[in-house]
Length: 291
Image (cartoon, rainbow, N blue to C red):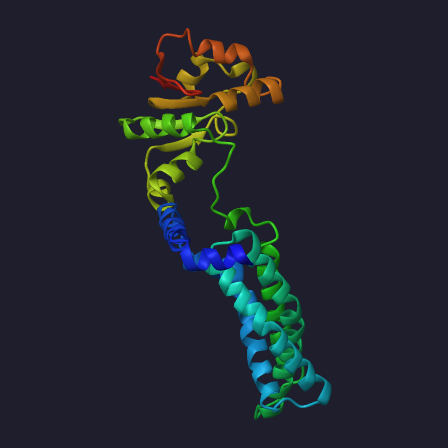
């Protein structure tokens, strides 16, 4: 707690860290607003529903002694937790504020479910026309949609924008130089044409609109296994191609997959075939130009 107070009073980097993260996220084609909607839309809906229910309990507008008392308990109990969450968030204590939010969402989810059911029931009594089961079906569909949106965040890889230790600085530097001096040739790749790297270097929108991105060799050309040779690559392409090969990709194909799709002799032909030239090398990154 002492460290938290000190950070709030004297740490000038908390806001700067958030601004830097927002700028980096924008360069990758995302935004803070979009990320918030992906991660917290359903939680926010439940917070709003539960908030009105708690307010109704504090104003003695909730029918039922147990429901009214429960809403009051939750309102009083979550108030200090809410203050603590805001404090951790302002201090950029990333390892703590989501734990507090998760704890808050446990009673909020229960209270929001009660409020949701109460609200559907109250709406059904006020409608001039009461089609049998129609309102319940709509509520069930809405609940199912929110459940699906919540389950998507369990495997949160598509929603996260975090640095990866699997990509070296040498690879990023190599791809950046290759893209900056690419000329008119199209990029290919062993299994993918390097869209992850171009997304990071150019930004998501520019990368997706780029005309230099072709298709990977595996799955698109008959140039794998015994056909993975420089001569075969020259024949299957309808124009000049850049083929980036990282050290990590080479080790994956040879050591992990034991040359199943891309054997060692195929890599050797890239160094000795006329018309296939290594035009860039360094930092675990090789770039071949196939004419």
